[in-house]
Length: 181
Image (tube, rainbow, N blue to C red; front, top):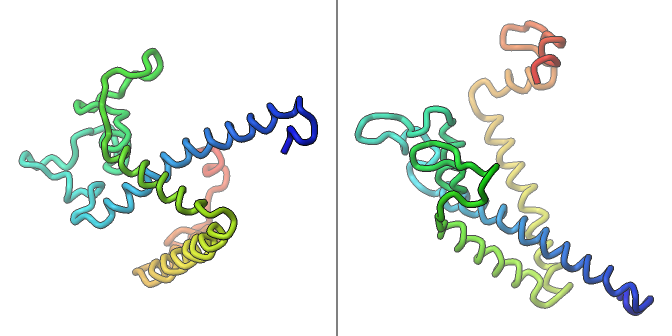
């Protein structure tokens, strides 16, 4: 399109396509992580729950400096921590040791296949995709809100969120809250 305006503007079109591809490649890996979380959510017990991490020695988790959810993401999923719970040095070296994450690789391929079929036939097929991808998050949020409002002490949490008071009815200390980021 830009070359049709002027031949020297062809680089603008190529740069926009290249930047869109780079953003898509980066974002599809994040979606692949979300796909791994979706698949892991059907495991019993959850990989990021305390029941899952109790081993023979009855230790609740392997890395004492990380929360159990951080341990699942940083150590098991993206390998930012080694098996001995020391962080991988990314400031001086790109790769300290070679670890192939086949779960992330397969889920990234699945995400790229889904993206391909979403844009396969152009605008006609992507309009059908929008029919699913727009109402589904709204439906999930509605289900989560209704489910969370049915939990015990949910209304106290709503009152705390809206009014700012704690469970005993004490007003918040605004200076303390602003001072503690």
